[in-house]
Image (cartoon, rainbow, N blue to C red; front, side, top):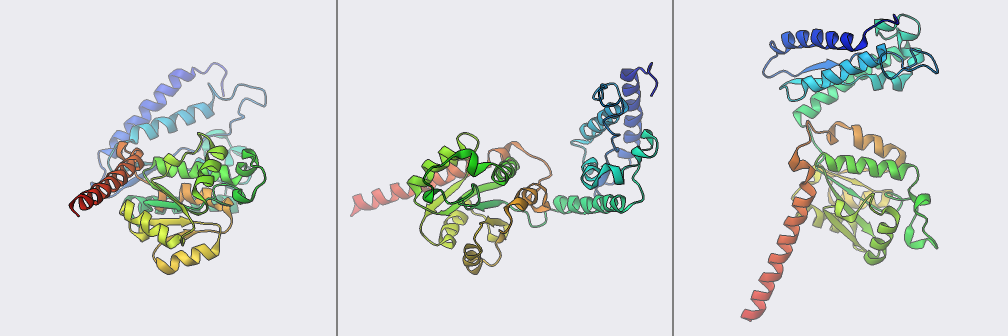
Length: 323
């Protein structure tokens, strides 16, 4: 808290000390057992007052920088994983969970309160979830989504006028953000909708523009056939099993029709406000790391489908010529 503190020198000294401790710990790591390094609890941001400079040259900036260094230092180290916990503290409420408001800033502890206990429980649950990700338990490899009341609000085919902001503001934007995050992780996206395809594609482009494109989906099935039949085509194109597939639809009747055909498929319906959180944070949608292959997995499947369709056309032409 001294005004003459040399924050640059202090940051380098702290990183050097942290690196010394890390080197000693990492040298003793087991070859088979993962070790999780919890983030330091970051002090309150308003250390220098309401109108003071709080982002730089403060204890908050120092600890935040150490967390950045810790995460970067552990990246690529086998069996060593950085685990963020500051979001848990903020989620349950700093005022009733973090002791920086009643004790000194450098203590960095959690209060013995109901919220404090929930943070400790949340950390244990996060470790458990991380272990499930590392073991690759029941991963979701394909997400199939409906359109009406799912990617946008309402049924666009029945709308007299479509105003993009009105049908996307709120949970649809969050849902699409989560879908694109899953795509970035290498999870394939597909569309299964009961609609007129020409009209729906036109409405889709009008509503989402470049924010979300049909090209983001490895398979697009828009017609009036049963959704289970369309899902059968999607599974065949992607060569993914039902147990590694998540189907999202606002209609319980459609969910029921699909699960009768595929009992092992996972489904999501009900309150759409929950979907974003589940897609972003469920262990089944996590990956250990994003690779170059995972980023381009959609394009690889699209190219495979195009090759398969071309081969079918060629075989048909050969058959016609031979007959």
